[in-house]
Length: 257
Image 1 (cartoon, rainbow, N blue to C red):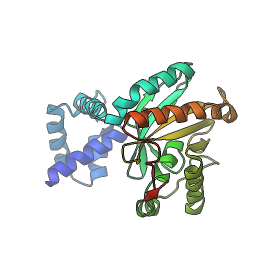
Image 2 (image 1 turned 180 degrees about the horizontal axis):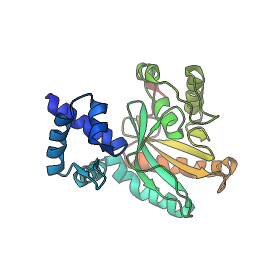
Image 3 (image 1 turned 45 degrees about the vertical axis):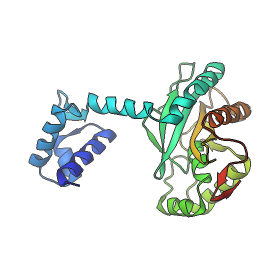
Image 4 (image 1 turned 135 degrees about the vertical axis):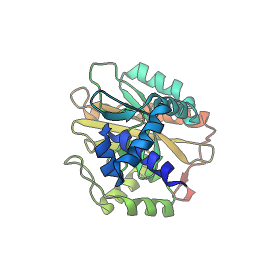
C-alpha cells in the first residue's frame, strides 16, 4: 500500500475523532505540514474533508455519504430495522443495534427514546466491550481461541466506579452472560445509565450483532429495565430467525451451546 494512501487514511481516522488544524494533523501523523497539506487538498477536492472558517478540518460530505451507504449494505441492519422500530414504538426507550469490530462495539443503528432525554451514543460511535451490555454479549459467544486473543488486547479502562477492570472479573462476567443468554451494564460505561442486551444470530448460530436498550436511572430504575428483558430477547430472536437462525444451532466458544 502506498505511503500517501496510508497517510490519507490516517488523516481521515484522526478527523473521525475530532476536527483538527493542519499543525495538529501533522503532529499526529509525524510528518511535515507540506505533506499533510497536499493530502488535505486532494481529499477536499473529492469532498472527503472540508476546512471551516477557523482553519480546522472536518470530515466531508463524501465520508458521510459512504458511511450511510455502508450501513445500508449491512444485511443485519436491514433485517433488524422493522423489529427495532416496533420495540422502540411500543416501549419508547433508546434502542441500539451493535456489531463487534476488533476490541470494541460499533453502533450501526439507533432509535431515540420518546422523552426529551437524549443519550450521547450515535450511529458509528464505538464503545468498549468490557463495560457495555452489547459488548459482553458479542464477546461471550466467541470461540475460545478468538476470545483469548481479544482479551489479551484489552486494557480495561475504568469508565465509572462500576466498570470491570481486570481479566478475571471480565471472564467471570462472560460466563454469566453465556449462562443467562443476555448481557447487563449496570452503570459501567456511563454514570446513571443502565443497559441490557441480547444476541442476534445468523444461520450458523454465530452472534453477529446485539440489540440493546439503554435507560437513564432517572427515567427507569435498573429493576424496571429488567422487566423489558423478555420482550428484548423476543425481539432479538425474531431478528435472528429472519436472519436464518434456527433454535439449537447456537455456537458458543467453538462448541454447540
